[in-house]
Image (cartoon, rainbow, N blue to C red; front, top):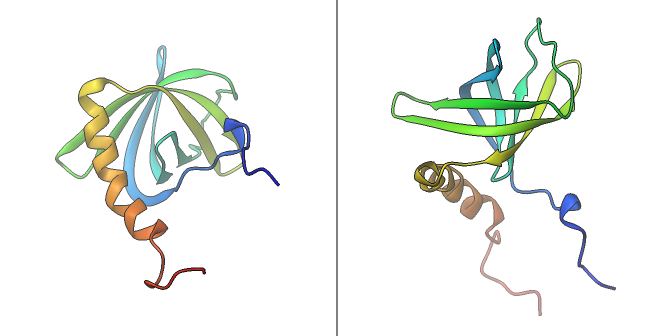
Length: 120
């Protein structure tokens, strides 16, 4: 059996995070909390006054602590009554390192085998 799957079925490790994101679409904007983040997108709590749809383009300003601000372009990919899913469409080169650094340590700890034994 082949383990090759179309890219759309690949689900990247999601890191739970307590952070704020400012979502901007033209003249509209919302500030909300991030629930989790991955290398390809993020999941945020849905603001009460949210009025955008899946497929809409937006700009995300992710604020992590007081030191890290990552400006991203994204599409709305999923809407539920409580959440909004975003997929990044553009990550500025100067922010890639910061994003990968944020995710890297979490992914290393999450995806590492629990012990040193092999599956042989």
